[in-house]
Length: 136
Image (cartoon, rainbow, N blue to C red):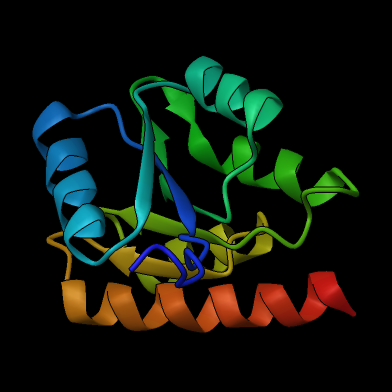
C-alpha cells in the first residue's frame, strides 16, 4: 500500500579513516535502519555537512593524522549544527581521554572494539535529545 508515510530515517555520518572499521560501522548502521554517510577524512566530513548535515556523527577521534576532536568543536560552534550529536569512537578510552573528548564537544564516547548494543543505545538516546532541543 503506497499510503503509509515514509518515516524519516536518521542520517548518520561515519568519520573513520580505517576502511574495515568504517565498513563495519556502516554495515551495522544500515542493518539498524539508518541512512549512512561515510567520510574517510575531515575534508570529506566537512563536505557532507555543507551538502546535507546528518542527524548524528560517529567520529573516530584520530582520523589518520587529523584530530577528529577539532571537527567536534567546529560543529558545536556552528549555530545551525550545534545540536547534532557527536559520538566519539576511540581506541584510547582512558578516563583522561574521555574527559578531553567530552570537553571538545562530543556527547558520548564509545571505545573500540565497539560494543554495538551500547553504541545503539547511545545513538538513540542522543538522537532523541537532539530532536527535543532543535524543535523547542
